[in-house]
Amino acid sequence: MKKLVIQLGVLLVFMVSVCIAEDSPLVAAAKREKERRAKIAAEKAETKSFTNQDIEEFKAKNPTGDETATESEQAVSDTPGEQAAPSSERDDEAYWKGKAEATREKTRQAEEKVNNAQNDIDALWRYQTAVDDGQQQQKTVGERGERMNDLDAAKKELEEAKAAEEELQEEARKEGAPPGWVEDRDE
Image 1 (tube, one colour):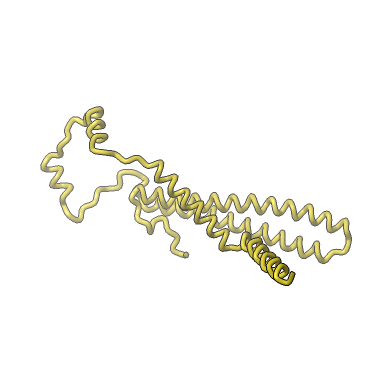
Image 2 (cartoon, rainbow, N blue to C red):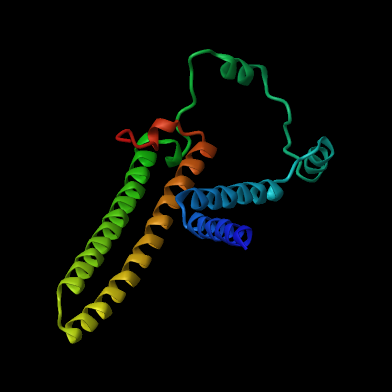
C-alpha cells in the first residue's frame, strides 16, 4: 500500500511538471524553431537547379545575336577601380535607406500599439480587481475582452511588419545592395 501511494505521488509530480512545461518559454522557442526549419525546408523544395542541358536549351530557344563580347568591351569591363553607373533606382542608396526606414517605422508603430493595448489590459485588470461592484466588474470584463482583441490584432500587425523587414533585407541582398543600406544601426 505504501509503495502504491509513493508511485501515485511520483506519477502526480510527473504529470504536473509536464503540464507546466507545456506553457514554458522553452517549449514555445522549440515550436518557433521547428516552424522556422519547416519554412526553410519548404523554400529549399521550391528552388530549381539548372543543369548545363537546361542552359543549352534556353540558348537554343533564345538566340542573343552576338554571343561574344568585343575586345574593347572586355577591356572596359576588366579595368580595375571602375564601377558601372547605377542602372536603376534600385541601385541607389537613398532608395534602399528610405524603404528600410519606412518598414522600421511601421514596426515601431506596431510595437507601440502592442504596448498600449497591453497597458490598457493591465489597467483594466487592476481596476476590475479593485472594484467591489459586480455590474462595474462585468462592464470592465467586456472592455478588457475588446482590448484583448485589439492586442491580438496589434500582435498580428507587428508580426507582419517584422516579416516585411526581413523580406526587404532579403530583397536587398538579392539585388546586390550593401547590407548597411537596409540594416538598422541603432540595434
